[in-house]
Amino acid sequence: MAPISIGAIIIRLIEASKIMDTVFVLTSGGPGTATETSSFYIYIKGLREFQMGYAATLSFTYLVIMIISLTIIAKVLTKLMIKE
Amino acid sequence: MEKLYKFLKYTFIILWTVFIVAPFLWAISTSFKDFQSVNSKVTYIPWLDFEPTLEGWRVLVKSPARGGVDIVEPYFNSLFVTCTASLISIVLGTLAAYALSRFTFKAGFVRNNDITFFFISQRIMPPIVLSIPFFIFLSTIGLLDSLIGLVVVYIVLLMPIAVWIMVDFFNRVPKELDETALIDGCNPYQAFYKVVLPNSIPGLIVAGMFCIIFGWIDFFFAFILTFTEVQLLPVKVVALNSSITPWWSLSASALISVAPLIIVAFIVERYLSKGNLSGALK
Image (cartoon, rainbow over all chains, first blue to last red; front, top):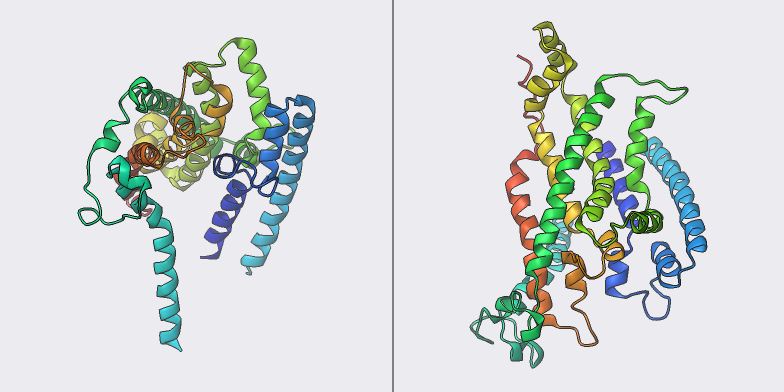
C-alpha cells in the first residue's frame, strides 16, 4: 500500500504546485493579493505588465527550486515509507 | 470502539461525497430552470419549486446577436485540437517508451532512467515556465492564433504523459514475449507491431484517456496563445463572466463541456484494472 501512496502524493504535490488557471478564474489573485500563488505572480509580471526579462528569471528560479525540493521530498518519503 | 470508528469513517465519506457531488447537482438543476427563477428565489427541487424547461440549453447554440452564447465553434475547435494532439503524442510516445524499455542507452553518464526522468520532468515544470518562450516562438513563426500552433504546443504538453504511462506498461510486458517473436523470425519492427502492441492495448487506452483529459481541460495555453480567431472551450466558458455572473448560461455551458469526459471515462473504465496480462505468456 505504501509505495503506491508515495507515487500518488508526489503526483498530487506536483500538480498542486502548478495551479494557475483555478486561481485565475476563481479569485484572480484574491482580495488584494491574498491568493496569489507563485505561478499566478509570474503570469502577472510576464503577460500583464510585460516585464518579460523579470518573468523569465522568476520562472527559471521557480523551476530550479521545484526540481530540488521535489527530488528531496521524493527521496525522504521513499525512505520513510518503505522500511525493509 | 470499533463501532465509533466505523461511524466516523462513514460520516466523513458521506460528507466528502456531498461536498464533491453538490456542485454538479446544482449545475444540473440550474440549467433546467427558466430565466426568472434562477435569480429570484431559492429553488432546488424540480416540479415542486420550478418548471423544468430546455431554454437554458437552447441558449447555447444561438449567436450572441440574439442573446445567446455561441458554443458550437469552440466545441469543434477543442475536439479537433485535443484529438489530433492526443493521437500524435500517443504514437510518438509509445515508440519512445518501447525504445526506453527494451534497449539500453549510454551517453557519458546518462542512462535509461535518466532519459525517462527527463521526459517526466516536463510535467513537473509549471507551465508558466514555457508560456513566454512559446509565445515568442509562435509569434515569430506566425502561428500565434491558429489551430496548428495550438496542436504543436499541446503535443509538447501531452507527450510526457504518454511516455510515462507506456514505459511503466512496457516494463511489465515480459521480455520473453519479444524474444519468442524474434526467434519465430520477425525483425524488431514486426516484433513490436504484431506481438507487443496487441498485448498492451489496455495501457494504450489508459494513456489515450489521460491525454484526452489533459488536453480537453487545459486552460492556460489556450488562454495565452489564442485571442479572437480560435477560441477553445475553457476560454469561452471563462469569457462568459462579466460584472454580473450569468449563472444560467454558465451552468449549461459547464455541463456540456464536461459531458465528453464523462463519456470517455465510462468507456475506458473497464481497462483500468490490472491483471489481465498474466495469461499472455503461454
